[in-house]
Image (cartoon, rainbow, N blue to C red; front, side, top):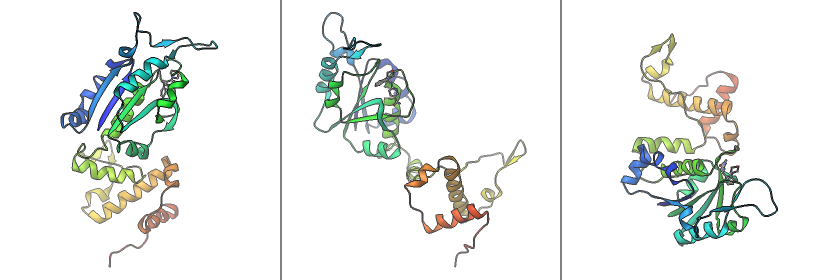
Length: 247
Ligand code: 4H6
């Protein structure tokens, strides 16, 4: 996959993409990331990228000629042009998965009061990372890049990939513990020390359902439940264990 990022602040991307799993994905050539400075597409002595808004008002607006020249220059027939803005559709795991299917992403980072509206006909998708305002689209572009890259085949180790399948099923993770078995009088749940793999699997699934119900019940709305999950949800609701001996 190729990810091209269009920004007025290219230096912001250096460190985040030079570390850890993204760095490894780039080294393995699973992804190529290019950072383009929008100012490089501006003409004239002042290389002006923005201008005052017609009709007056505060702030500056990105000039259409500059941004469109940049997009035209790096576009490919397969490219998906994504604009990071507070008005976009809210990023979630299923959108990250959708975007991970493209050969070429072009991420446009907005600034100031936004873009000249005529640029929007060159945009295929508008994405927001949440309902809050940032000074620019750079951090959202990094968040999106990270969420997409970790879904590309070969980027995560086998263990992580398997874990990700369970995340994609719209439940929160179960609680994790490591040594020591007792820390500041707090004990690791006894079942995790028991060695009963099947009971541990069931306990973890129940914890995931319980956590999701309490912390992000919204995630349960567009999801179906297996027979086992229904059983565990009943256990949660009536605070008792059901009979589930294997025959
Ligand atoms: C486009 C238009 C994304 C981009 C306006 C971007 C939050 C998100 C920006 C703006 C962003 C998000 C400029 C409007 C600063 C507010 C850059 N903020 N803004 N939630 N800011 O994904 O003023």
